[in-house]
Image (cartoon, rainbow, N blue to C red; front, side, top):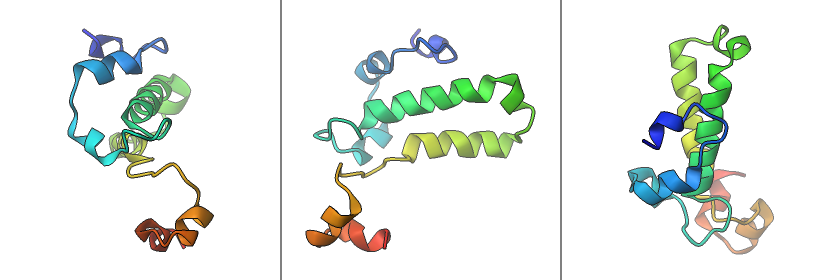
Length: 99
């Protein structure tokens, strides 16, 4: 029922998060107030809506559409909610990935 509304801009990402237990959620920090699985759901659903727009859809291949959706799902995966200088200052393992 919830997924039937995925193509609608008024989609409720909080409802989807409540009724699912997706594996991808494990890669997001539940204590992060913004970069979390609900944010990923919201961005992915918005990307889905953008991809339905005729002016966009006609210029993309199926592979590009799938890549766009995967990028939306994972764009903040393992994001700790701090910036790069903080990661460097605290010798976080993620700092080396983004130098």
